[in-house]
Structure formats: C-alpha cells, structure tokens
Image (cartoon, rainbow, N blue to C red; front, side, top):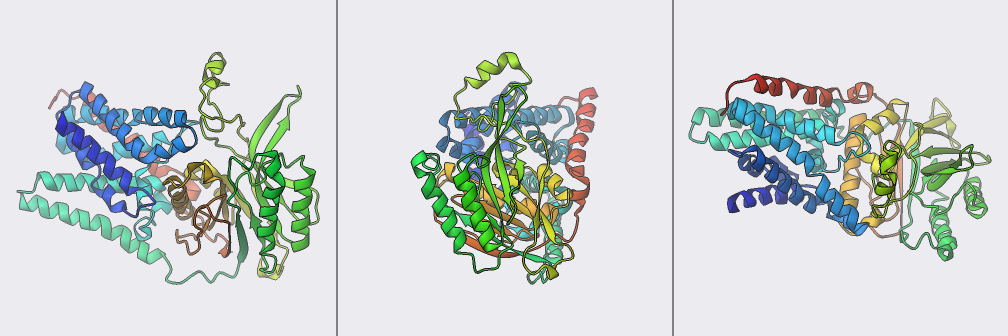
Length: 510
C-alpha cells in the first residue's frame, strides 16, 4: 500500500512540476513511469482506485488555482477530472491481462493520447492538462504540430516514457538496451532536426506587416464592476492607449471585459472609444459583455468582443462560442430541463452567459500606408480566454481566412498562481499548429506576441500596467492541420479499437 501510494504521488509531483511556468518539461519524459509501474499486477478494482487517486493528486498540483476564483469549482474539477485516469487505468489493465506487457506497451501511447483527445471534446471539454503543454519552452521539438496538432506531442511524450520503462526492464539485455537507446535518440533527433529546418534564423522580412498595440490595464477584477470605479477604469485604458498615439498603429487591443458595461448601451464608454479611434485614426478591439433581446422580450447575455472603426457608427461583434463550464454557464440545462434547478443551484461562482453561434473574423481596414498591402484590410478573429485552449476552435477561425489571431483574456482571477503563465504558454501551440502570428492581450498579464513558429520576443509581467507594440507578419501559409483538422488525433483514437477488440476475443489472461 505504501509503495503504491509513493508511486502515485511520484507521478503526480513530476507532472505538476513539468507544466509552465517552470521550464521543467523534461520531467514529463519519465513522469508516467511510476504510474505504469503502479498499474502492474493490479485487479480492475485496484486500477480504478489507483487511477482515480493518481488523477486526483495530479489535479491538486495542476488545478489548485481554480480555488482562487471558486473553491467549490476547484473541488468539483479536482474530483471530476480523475475519471479520465480511471478510463485509462481500466483499459490499461484490461490490455495487460489479455495481451501481456509486450503488446501493451505498443498500445499505451495510443491509449493515453486517445484519452486526452476525448477529454477535450464537448461542453465539458478540458484540455488544460494535456501533456503537450509541458513542452512549450522547447520550440525546436514541437514544430511538427502543424501536422498533428497538440496531441502529436502527447503521443511523443508517452512513447518516450514507454521506451525508458522498457529500457529499465531490459537493462540486463545489452541488445535490447542498445535498441531502446537508438529509438530514444531518434525520437529526439527527428523533431529537433525538423524544428531546426523550419524555424528561420532571422525574423521574417515579410512586406505585409501590421503594427499592433496591446493595452494591459491591470484592473482589479472585483473592483472593475463597481459603479464608482467605472470612470477610473475608462481613464486607465484611454490614457494607456493615448501613450501609443505617435506609433502609427494599425490596431489597438484591449483585454476581455475591459469595458465592464454593456458597451452597446453605454453612451459614455462608446463616446470615449469613438473619440480615441477617430483622433488616432485607428481601429480598436475590446472585450465587453453583450446581450440580445428575443421575440418574447427575454434576453441572452454574452461574453463578447467589439471592433470599433474610425468615422463609423457601426461595430462588429463576436460572441464567445466555448464558455467555461460552471464558470460562465451551467451546462446541460437546455438538454435536461428537469435538472435545471438542481444544476443551477450548485453555487460555484458561475455566470449566466449564452454561447455565441457564429464564427466571426473581424475585417480590420488598413487606414495608414495602404500601399504596403495587396488588399485594404486584414482578418483578425478573436478567441476569448478559455477558447484559446482548444486547437480545433482556433483552426476553424484560421481556416476562415485569418491573417492574425487575437486572444483576449482576464487571468486576474487566478492571482499569482501558475495559471496565467500556463494559459499564455498554451497559445504557442495555436500559433505553430496554424503558422499564424498571435497577439495576446490580458488584463493583468501575461500579454505577449507570438510569431508563427511559437517564438515570443515581447511579453509583460503580471499585475502591472503595460503597453506592448509589435509589427506582425500576416499569415502566409496554410498548414496540414489548418486544412484537415485532427486527422492524427482521430486516427490514433480510433486505432485503440483494434487491440481492445483483439483483447476482448482473446482467451489469454496474463
């Protein structure tokens, strides 16, 4: 019992330390080995218990920050998400008993990657703890995600774990040790050489560039909704934006809910923003709450982004599609109306937003030096906060013709925990998957620019007022992933069916 507990905790600690902000992603290369050793010779009942406990301990180390916003929400997430570890553990045990360790280890990378991919799907999708995000500091090793998406890196990490474990078990067999070492070396060399080949030595000299400014207001998320603070909030963003008036920007970006009012109806805020964009002759994107009345005079509220253009009264609107479950919306209340009262009674600090229904790419007109461009505008879709964790959602926006990708967020809720850094680093994968530049604007940080190879040259500290300016190259290519989506992930997930079927009809019980 003591040994099993230590193995479970060892995996949880190694996984927790391997994620940002710590640049210890190499720990992920052997973090799963204690867990795999733990699962040896377990019964199904024991695999359920230890799978759950390992997931539980891991989630404490990686999701503790949810408690800064909602302790009940953190408790629910930490209790619920280990179910996926159970899912993995039971299948691992089933294949071990039926096929033996020799074939099991071939199946393990497929099984784990499939589990991660399934965990990212649906309204309860939660890809935050994907193993791939441990590798965000190793850009030369992850460039192939333009083909495989983030889950290709997960597959790679699990394969490394399996090979190291196999090497440990065969340490007395020199021939097998050499074979495993060669395979491990190749597993690092191939992605590294590819990364060295595709990452340019110098910054892109693309002629079609836009100049973007980010405004990090550093506003207390609990204070900003106070009526007495509304004027000061507006003054903060207006003054920071005016600091950039001589920099010949094409676009200014304010973060998620930078305007803590229904901007559609706020004369004061709209007038101030229109004055700013008209005076500087510049477009501005800001996060804001929004609403829509229905025919029966009820209404829906949204977490949204508005695009303001000089000398026009109209604004373009994007409404967030993927809401944070139990944070911005209680899921399943429409699907299971009988459970609506019960689900909404779960006090986890949830909002009551409705999901948007349209993929919107803001068409931002170029108002300065139009001769730089073949067209007089560029497309800039916005991902709001949690949406940036979903590679498929980002892909849909990019496939729709995006020239750059914008992320706006308010990570102030999570304090000085690991969450703001983890969230920012995850955006590196969205850039590489689609070979697109990203402008990420956060209320309290981390705000940063990321190029199409995942490199960031400018970023802010957290909890400081700041502005950032960057010339961004427009997207020049369409990747395999952008064009075809999760071909790799779906294939890997479906391939799990084959060994499971073989094991089911196999008479062998090891």
